Length: 464
Image (tube, rainbow, N blue to C red):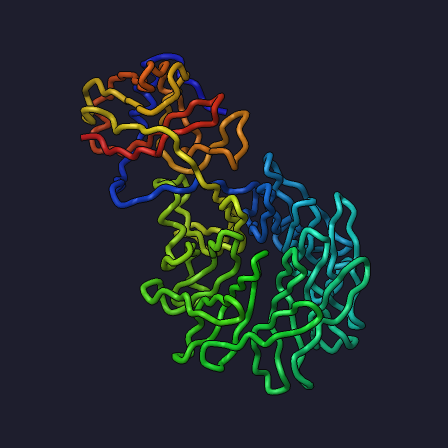
């Protein structure tokens, strides 16, 4: 909920708390509200977001102590749900479908080896062991809305040799390999047409991306014959992943009609991989100079890769470095993992939710501290009650009564400055005095019409 200031003196006092840091607002496109998702324990912020469904429910993992972690669900309505284990110490999730079914893995032997894991699905709070292909361990990586699951499993006891599998109607079967002596090592994703993607490898350990469709398997090839992996496929059959290029660098790629395209942007760094694609063709992934010095990217159809950090609100309370973008739904919501720019020991699961401004907010006028300043919006619904807000920090804030896919504010813990009724032309304004101490300071503003779930764009202003 918003914090409501009851008097002008409180507004002035809050302005005086603003600390210096400036933001160049002209070149930025603040497309997303940023939400760091809650953890299971406060002492150790070690969480990661892995997947998201059409409704904005996110799954991933969260630490339960300094060693173990559990698969968790972050419902779109807020909060966190511990999904537990099969009886072992740890579990993790990798996929969630629109029925709320979740796929992942769990240890089953308390105190046993962390490498002995079983593919599982959660239906509600019931956990189902999917078994193996004959070996000791298995992992579930992807799931579609038909409840079909793909992943990888050992097929000989304690051999560590893996085959890709499809689990359907309670039965796990091997996904075929394209050649004799060539195994489908892992399947990472499956769409609602039951098309699955992953990778396979031969005895020479050469690996290539694979597509399984209608009982057949297709080798998708690579950029320079040096290896590739397919991580995701949308319902239109477009596939994304990564491939080694001729310069021995790993590049993000996509396959359309099984034809490979290099989508790496050289200005982004030397390394990239595409992790997911939605049905609108928007791709997310990681890139940089290595996997360990990577940044999350977004790529819209026909456009180059761009840093996700460029699209989140400025002056976030924690200096976020979004390193992993692992999933995107058709509403454009992105699940991933972020780190603090100054601390790399912890990780935070994050949700980026697109915002949809429907009216315009002008910067404070005249924009000088020590004077009365006017905030003005245009294009609001005539007669609407417009609430003017500000914050020292950017981030994300739910609008009470509104779904995140409708809209969200891009302010962290916003404070209400005042309200005004839009006139017949859709114009509303308020005037407040900004104290002299605010000179040189940057403040973020936004306006909302709560009953319409309507917002203005984010305004970032440095007072003269």
